[in-house]
Length: 186
Image 1 (cartoon, one colour):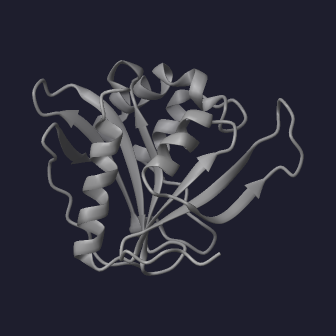
Image 2 (cartoon, one colour):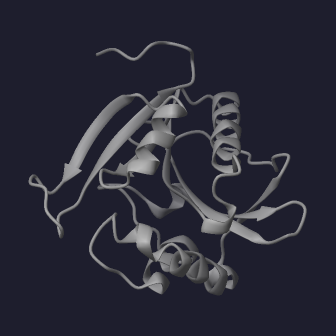
Image 3 (cartoon, one colour):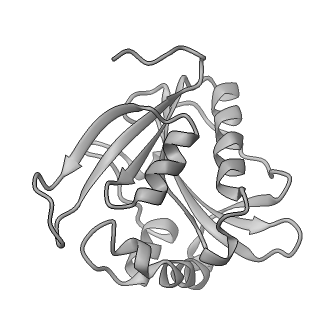
């Protein structure tokens, strides 16, 4: 398990720890993101995906749900639900904060909010003693790949999933961003 992490609001977003009371909102967010979620794996109901944020999270092999923090992102200005974020403290090692998911509603995309969240996480993680951030990205999700690389996630940690490309085949890439200023080894 990695260090505790204190999330505060950013200039435009507040962070609320997810609970069952957020189920309808989180389900609605994933319904709006249905075209995207089809790039990430076999079809799943939005409510089933939402349950991983408000109920039982998916954890890495040998992991524990106690290390997972799921968050609803809200607009400071309007209070509207903007998106969801899921973090795993201490994966794949104790010094890494893993971003298991960062999903913004389509209407809120393209406003720099994803950058704001990732920059905030980097600052908070570094302050808490983490040496890197990690993120899993679906290989068919080209906009997300561009986003994460532009945010400094340039070290490939892993590639998992199907070995061959196809319409019903999926794979993810684990990317790391160093927080200590060191250049990743190749």
